[in-house]
Length: 396
Image (tube, rainbow, N blue to C red; front, side, top):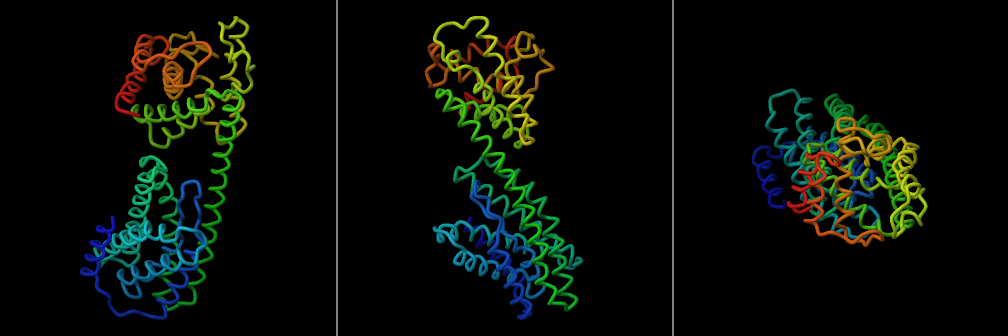
């Protein structure tokens, strides 16, 4: 990536050499960019920062061209990294510097490529090129560091880019109008709408984190009540996400399916532990009690707006294609696809998982796959089973 960044700088320097620089405007824009860079939105769980300095960097296109904008971007990054509290400054600088250089280079090349067009159009090209490159590289880097699948990371990044693009562009255009109208004093005022954007994103992020923390708390409750679920839930979640992708679900929906799979048995916290861990065959009354866990789980999750979409998936993950499942005895077409995926993933891990169960000996993976195939068309959806087998044999 560093080589690519240096190559981009070389192309940019050749195509758009530094012209006459309006130094006063450059100093004002650099100062505003640094203030904004020092107040990023911190996505702690993802390990990334969302910087709000880009609109001021676009203003530097008018004061000296894209090469000056790139140089100031590098200066701002160095200064912000040194001034921002926290350890591992050299580490974060080493990660971010190539990303910043390449993003600025791509944006600058697009600015140069639209030479002759309206200045606002050229600014749109710069902002779009910068954001798309930056988001893609950050997603790829997080994927390499093991933080998240690249598909999910990239899609989340695209969503963030779309949300921020309009706000960034409006502020950038405001900066451009101010500079072209010799109203340099207006430029620092552009920090105000950026602070509003920062507040909106931070508020949304807090709600997302709250939902995630709620999910973690529910999972911990279930694991404490029934220790065998410790690894089972995570494995079922990973399997369900992979199978969902193979069945054509979008990365966002597949990730939501993974969360639902992790929580699919949350209703068991309301089931008598002695019954759940009973080594002998359950009585009819005990089995009817256990069967209520899917309804209990759906009721628990329905209390939070964040989990409303996955409630039907939880409620129906024990339905069967032949109508002999529970709680509503639904048939094939009435069962959500996500519920079918959870059912297959859960059944496989229950049969071939590494945690011992009180009521049976574990099967080998091949034996568990044979059982899934045997029950295809009656208990399990055949298409889901085929996708699941592909996922297992492809190495999940």
